[in-house]
Image 1 (cartoon, rainbow, N blue to C red):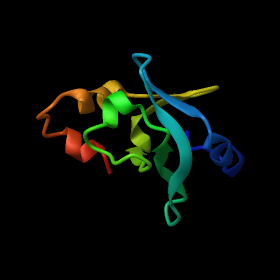
Image 2 (image 1 turned 60 degrees about the vertical axis):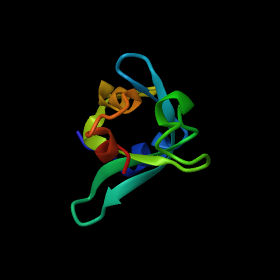
Image 3 (image 1 turned 30 degrees about the vertical axis):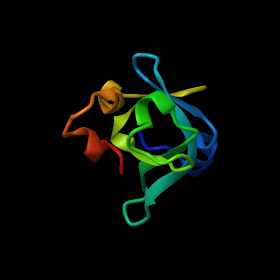
Image 4 (image 1 turned 90 degrees about the vertical axis):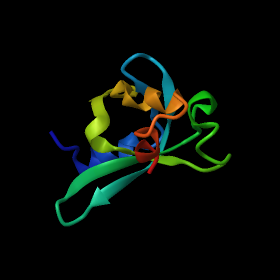
Length: 98
């Protein structure tokens, strides 16, 4: 079920965790496909340094595809795919950081 406009704005500021409980970052903005009227990604800031240190410059963020979102509540849970970023030499990792 796609979020409504009120729900979309309420996503900003929520913390994002993997479904294994690892803090990923905080939602700073959402990426929308206006033609399809759908959320396509979450722009994250305040990133977990352990996951992103070698891939993202300080002060920069990442966009997580919305299809990774598993649940939205007080926090947002995403697939644990994000934890693969922590593995050096993982070819899929570069695709995850958009």
